[in-house]
Length: 278
Ligand code: BG6
Figure 1: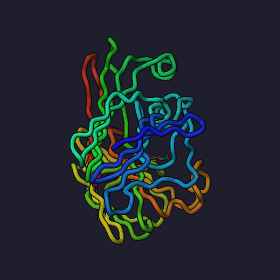
Figure 2 (figure 1 turned 90 degrees about the vertical axis):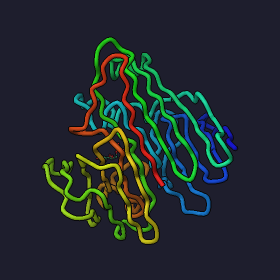
Figure 3 (figure 1 turned 60 degrees about the horizontal axis):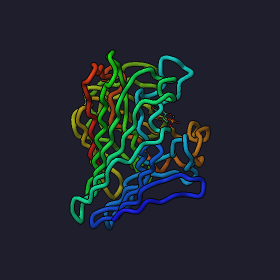
């Protein structure tokens, strides 16, 4: 079953409830801000202080960072691109069976997007809600010149306490430490006792979040980079839409094409970034 919902300010989202999971997806940014397998805790973290407003990203869930990840070359352009603050069109909802709902969204270039990034494009986002959350982000170049993208499915995962969390699957991988801008190599699993902001490269398909009483699996395709981020105490207190102690209850593991893993897309060509979370 799915229901279209609208807040008093006109902010629209779709609520999905099938036999295996429930989810909420906003049209603003095609932003998944809730996903929960039946009988389990929510997989995604959502800030208690988040905005639900047009042209603003929700703090939590899965913002889509596109067509660039992080800051762009021109410092005046919005961090993480414009997809997460753009209104997508819902093109299809398909209840494939009682356990599986598939939703499709699209965003095309407009006068607004061309002011920020002067290319013709089609961005299609397909989400499958079942006992796994599957996302497919397909970029098509509809322009006559090639373009370059970096991107991320910026998943905020709910964890019991960040101090009890470890990330497996990134050992021996090179990474850019975005705090010192140094290139380093991971040596062991990742644990958290300070701010972490890293872009891992040469990443294999599977990454595992080991939490106190559960583990979460992330499987990526069309991507060989992953961002690992937790703002820790100081940055968290400076961030918009976050309570001061919010850093304790989430970790971001972002399925990405970032840093050296950028994609050049030629006219009429496509690229698909896929992530499956469970
Ligand atoms: C992460 C970046 O992907 O996103 C961090 O690595 C950044 O540096 C974080 O702080 C949140 O960004 P924003 O724009 O949503 O506040």
